[in-house]
View (cartoon, rainbow, N blue to C red):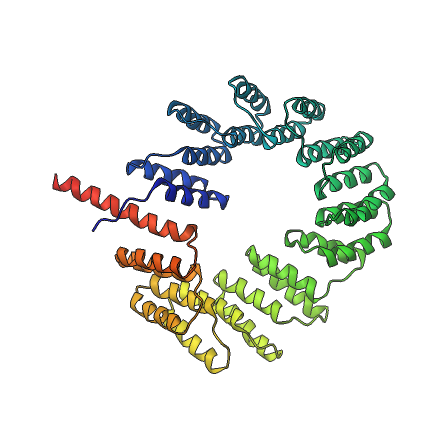
Amino acid sequence: MCPTTPSIVEFNKILTSLVKTKKHYSPAISLSHQMEFTGIKPSLVTMSILINCYCHLGQINSAFSVLARILKRGYQPTTITFTTLIKGLCLHGKVPKALQFHDDVLAQGFRLNQVSYGTLINGLCKMGETRAALELLRRIQGRRIKPDVVMYSTIIDSLCKDKLVSHACNLFSEMVVKGISPNVVTYNALIYGFCIVGQLKQAIALLHEMPTKNIDSDVYTYNILVDALGKEGKVREAKNMLAVMMKQVNEVNKAQAVFNTMTQMGVFPDVLCYNIMINGLCKIKMVDEALNLLEEMDYEKIIPNKVTYSSLIDGLCKTGKVSNAWELLDEMHVRGQPADIITYNSFLDALCKGHHVDQAIALIKKINDQGVQPNLCTYNILLDGLCKGGRFKDAQEIFKDLLSKGYHLTVQTYTIMINGLCKEGLFDEALTLLSKMKDEGCIPDAITFETIIQYSLKMARMTRQRNFFVK
């Protein structure tokens, strides 16, 4: 039986999910083309998503072509649609065209919002047109658009970079008087401004003011101050500031620079600092650099703990260096750091992805004998490996066993099994499991819907081809 063609609403969910990953703009466009090819008409939401994709890819002409289609079909473009186009133009250095488009939109009787004007102001400031941005801020107040913290912060930042700190302070006071609360971006801009004009006392005073306004400082805040103090030769103050930063801020992408600065300032990291950095490096697949830090820990007589090893083993497994991961597991045991299920799940994932499912099953039995209890993540890894390895019946047995034992299954567990059923050609059973999933209070996510829709598309194409040859 041929499955029912999915609705445009379901397709829009998939497209939205793809776009949210910020990497899959081209696949989203391709999927929309497939959708239209199968006879499903795009909605205003679909075309708005397409505009967003084209803008991010820098294909501005294609984005405007979609806008033309929207108008031709008699749809009413939303403010979000216009803002997306303005942002696309600004992102790719076409701010004058964005301003002209803004004028054209208003001339056609459409309205823009705070986000639209925030985008234009940001574009102007990036071009160095701070005065024009400030003029636009003044103009919109007469259009019943209330300026927000984003607009003010953008202009304050631009003024500070131009060393017009007194003007930035005046604008800061203006926004506070108007009841617009500053945020960490606003404060960082002013702190930077005071630092570059040599007014460090005022910069540090702002840092101390932030907690009284319920604003948390971030890595950038401290980096500005540490850099300024270092350049002024105030090493002790910089050292203290750096120590405070490491206690209050945990942003991995800044860790390398922080570590280097810490060493230069004579503030040496502890096991927690090393773990933050090792975990971050492993997540971005810089495992060799993470292993270098493990060696550095040994040199500095800092004893790695379970978190250190788990991060490294996961990184090694995900980059295909499983033999090195096993060596680290042995080292863990030698150092009296027994592995837990989180560590073993990394090995299981690598084995299943490497099509060594039998070895994965053997490992689960082994760790069970050692008193390490598998968790649901363990079973999800195994179920996925079995389904992708053509052993769906084995997966079904384990799935039934989990249900009988009262496990609270997650959306990931159900999606794995739905995908397995689709691959086996058991689409009706997949839909039944989808219904059961909802009955159990487990809400399907974008991946679940994508699995169902992709299979529906495949079946629709097969039906169309079969009908063509029959004719």
